[in-house]
Length: 188
Image 1 (cartoon, rainbow, N blue to C red):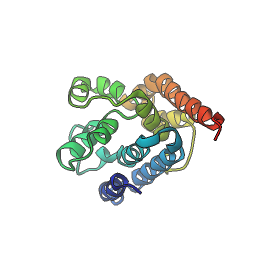
Image 2: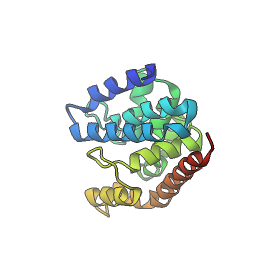
Image 3: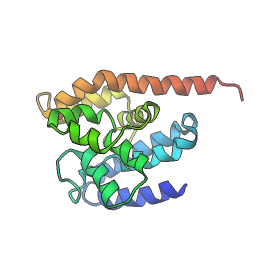
């Protein structure tokens, strides 16, 4: 484990395990997916794993200020935890967050405070999140989107956002799978 991941896991656990045990399970599962695709990320593998385990900390009751977890989590990481800027940016923009931010009237704040990391990293975090159930087990992006829409309801802000984001989520996860397949074809 790198210094970054050694720091990230206990922080995420301290914010999620007790108040939101299922969210903590999910976050651990997302981090596991990050370890699985690490070979395609090279030196950014540990960065992705740290962002993966921290991506949902904004749900913590102690951090929820705006009700928009990517923004709340990123602000905490930046302002309180003094986290690596790239981890902060990945948390802020995970899984098409800009679309939900737009629906909440927070897109300017999100994009004004947190620049996006390179697309391959945003794709990778989206892949990890959308291939993990709320209980932390593997799934696929279609079932994950359906689960989210069903949990929140089709007419809810989240239900509407996730359906709007679905094409980009599927494209994002496809790009990661293409990179994984290409890496497997490379001779040793």
